[in-house]
Length: 234
Image 1 (tube, helix red, strand yellow):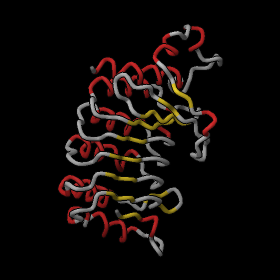
Image 2 (cartoon, one colour; image 1 turned 180 degrees about the vertical axis):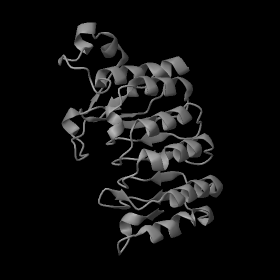
Image 3 (cartoon, rainbow, N blue to C red; image 1 turned 120 degrees about the vertical axis):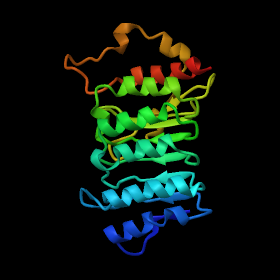
Image 4 (tube, rainbow, N blue to C red; image 1 turned 60 degrees about the vertical axis):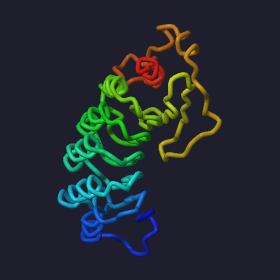
């Protein structure tokens, strides 16, 4: 396992470039955590270094967990490259992209690639501006119709709390954890959501109380999509 969080001194663009160009030769490494690689709101990843990272991951074959949290990653830098990585993924099981600057372009590209991905099990893209994308719910639903391997999905919905849905197996009971804006879980608000409970909700109960158009799908709507998806995939 390698993590930049354990570094003794600050990183710069040259350090990041040196790491990413060497990823292909990290044989036997199973977990790569490149977190906090930013200077203020500017990522230390350049286009060249992120492209090198993707090429290295594709050729490495042993890295199963990749964490790119808090790196100020933006659509123009990573959208197409992440989609390419997931389309040709042969070893990556866990991908974490929390606390970046990712918007709808990355969401659309990544969720589309996940539709045909059969390797990734855990995907977390919570705490990103993507949460405000009005078509997030339909994009997630479309992805789940095609994806048969994803077991855990973390994402944010508009200005509402973060939802983390795990164990998306048929006949299982999904759970979600409500988190505050700083990402801390609130155990008191963790609860199981059963199929019958969701089906018993009336239309009036699923509507937004505010007359304004919502910035994204409601938590209940997304839970309904995630619960229904495994049944469609059986």
